Length: 557
Image (cartoon, rainbow, N blue to C red; front, side):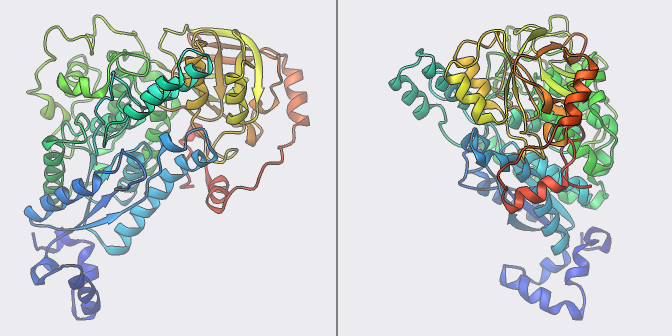
C-alpha cells in the first residue's frame, strides 16, 4: 500500500525533507515512522451530545478507524457538527437545520482537502448530516464509504418522537391528559439512534445504500449492537480497498444509481426530504437530476412498506425481518432497479443482491408487488399557478387525492400552529404557511409541529396544508411543501389571500389558485417583500447563496 497511487494526496503533505514540520505535527497526534508511508483516511465523525441520533457515533468512529488501520491505512478521526430537528422543531432554531447540511458538507471538504486525506469514512446519524456527508464525498471524489449510525429502538408502547409531537396536538384537543403527555415524553426516546420510523434519517440511509455508497445492510441496523460496530470496521477496511482500486464516489454516483435511490425511497414510503437531498447530492456529483425524474420513476414504482408515519411499523421491525435488501431484490427482479451499478463493495448491485433471501412467510410489513400499499409513488410532484417550478406532496391515498377549499393564510409557522391549537382552523380549510422557504425563512423549516397538531386535533383528513417550507419525514396528512418559487422570491404563494379558493389534485399533479390570471398578475405586480427580522450571519449568507427548493436548495452556485 505504500505506492504513490495509494497516497495521491497525503504524499504532498508528508513526503520529502521540506515536509518535516508536517510530520513533526503528526507525530504528536500518534504517527510513527511507518505511518507516513500509508494512505491517510479521514474518519468524519458527527458525534455530539446535541441529539440521541449522534450520541454514540464517537464509538463507531473508533471502530471505523480500527478497520482502516487493520487494512493497512492510517486513520485520522475528526468531527463535524450536527443540529437536532427534533429538539429545535417549531422554534427559530429550526431555521439552522437545512443550513447545517451545507455547513457539514463544507466542513468535511475543508478538512479532507486541507489535510490531504486519500480516502474518507463518513458516519452520520441525524437527518442533515447524512446528505451533508454525501455532498462532501461527491465533491471531493476521493475513495469513500458512508456509514449510517443506525436507528433507535422503539419507546414504551411502540412510541417514537412523532408520538410525542402528536400527543401535543391531542393534549390541545383534550384527548391526552397532562399525565399521559408526560409519560410519552419520558419514554418515547429510550437511547441512541435516529428517529425510528421511515422518517428522513432512515429514508436517507436507505437511499444512500441504494446509491451504492454504503456497504450492504448498513442502512438497516440498530444504533446499538455488534452489527453496527462490525459495519463500521468493515467500512474502514473497504475504503483502503477502494483506494487500492482507485474507485471513487463519482464512479458509483451515476444517474442510474440515483434512479435506484429514488425507486427505493418510493417503495419504502420515504420522506419528501429525499427530493431535496438527492437533488443536492446529484448536484455535488455533477449528475443531472430534477423533480421530473421523481415523477417519472414514481409512475412505475409502487409503495410496498407499511412503515410510519403513514403506516404501522418501525424501522427496528423491518430490520428484524431482513431490512431493505429483500425489498431491493424484489425491485431488481422486477426490472425496477439498475443492477449494473457499482457499489463500494467493489461489486455491482446485482452481485450484492444475488444471494439475498426473501422476507419470511407471514410478515406483513413489506407487501409484494402484486399487493402494493399504493400502485405508484406517494411522493407527488405538482405544478400549477401556485407552484410554476413545482411542489412536492406526500399523498398516501389515506387522506384522499384531491382537495379544494378556502385559503387560511399565515406568514410563519408559529402563526399557523397557534391558530391550529386554538381552533382557528376549520375543516375544509387549505392552510397556507409562507415565507418559510430557503431564502424566506431563511432555512426552510420543517412543518412537523403544525402537521402533528392537525393530526392530534383529529383534522388529518379534513384540512390540507401547503407551504414553501418543507416537512419532517414524520409529517403525514394532505400536505404539499417545497412550493417554488417561494414567497420571499415573489412566487405566487406570496399573493394568496384568506378565502381564495385553492385546488390540489394529486391525480392530475396540479395545484392551482382558482382566480383568473389577470387578478393573479395584478397582485404579483403590486406585491412587495415584507419587512422581516434581520437573521444571524450564517442565515444571511445562506439566504444570499441558496438555490430554489426545486434544485435542492444548494449553496454551491
